Image 1 (cartoon, rainbow, N blue to C red):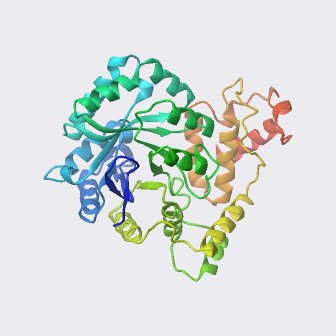
Image 2: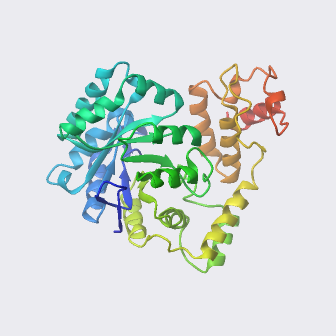
Length: 377
């Protein structure tokens, strides 16, 4: 296993982090974790060098932390840096930070959390936790030895990310979504470099883009075969991220023991600045090849937002384009159901036309949304 500096903290972490968001389940029920298999997977990873385990309050409908706590019994807790996250959307008053934190300590069967994050920050949630004095919670928890390092995970645009990084001197690390398809999405590569320039460790989530980069269409794999290397799609993705020395940890939400074994083997060889110019050129060719499959020419500029009916217009187009790109209609339909449950799917478009004059690409947004709904519903 390869290890890297965790920003300015002085500790070293494994480049592979165990993400406890996609543990094996029973009866196709996300809340029913197969505890025996999950514990075996987590302990196998730790036995083979993984020292960063990541969970969160809502994962597996509140049960992920419980199973992680069980897996870290019998001396395993002392072998890892344990990360989990505050459910900031449920925090309504300052005291709630402490209340949720104490509940998490109980679930995880520990007296401290090494890496504690404000979960899934965006502009709205950032303003909320500032008003509720989150920084006082961190300072108090650190002084009491209950939290070692303070961080946040992020889902918004780069200017908001920069504002959050600059908005609190106590940050030790951040967690961002990044893979070679999302270099300009959310924090993106700019966020990676900016956070690192400030001394923050950077933890990567969604390195395989929710599994989309784990298996490629044949036409895409043919591009990578030009390298002469027998790396899998997964290995190309991990090696691209690990090539950046600013990356401290790459989280993988593993669901089977075979995935754990595969990822441990790959990550034992991932080192900074190890990809050749030809490797990087081929990955760029893959990105452009996949992007060329896009059906809707949406740049996600956001000028069409907010929609008066709550439709996430760029999000619907992005989902549709990725469904076509990766030739995975089943996954696309599954994600679209979530859009529908959040009342932000294309189904809620009333064809009011307010977005039409705002689109710099002159897209016929209402008719395209109808197409998205017809294909994915």
